[in-house]
Length: 187
Image 1 (cartoon, rainbow, N blue to C red):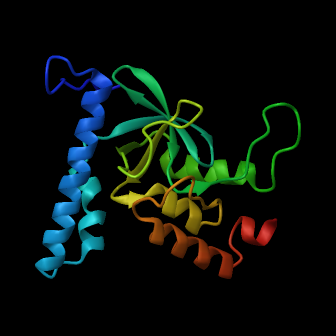
Image 2: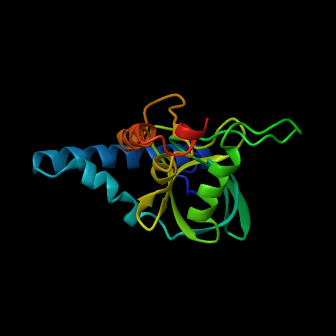
Image 3: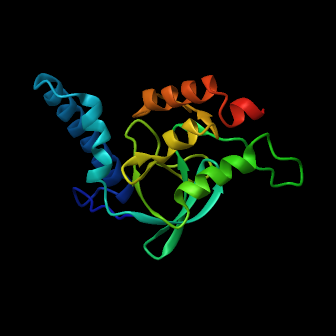
């Protein structure tokens, strides 16, 4: 996990991380407002964010259709992709949900062994209830979540609050559903 230098001596690393997130969110809001005033397309500004993201991290495992493991600072970190939910792979001997293995295969084909960019979303928590990092995952400038949803291997999922790029996820699902792609035709 990245270490953040406290802004003042009495600030804990968690407080420093929260402060940094707030400042980044405020900067993004100012950028969007400035772009709107200048006549720029705010969606184009948001989509360019992955290019400004830190260097990529290697995907070392695909757990299922919405969760990956990445190599970070010599260790492994589990990451839950924001904005989608795939059928569950059973881990207790019961049957998988319909299209669970296929969903995992789609994400595996897209990401395994490749470098991806992880982008935090200021509208979402840093981690979920299972301790997984919550991130948008980009591969070659494309959203992995949108790719998986468009393939019909997952559906759009909003956990608690709307997230960045949500409209793209919804549009991908509507297209996959209309074409009976993946789980929409199989389940």
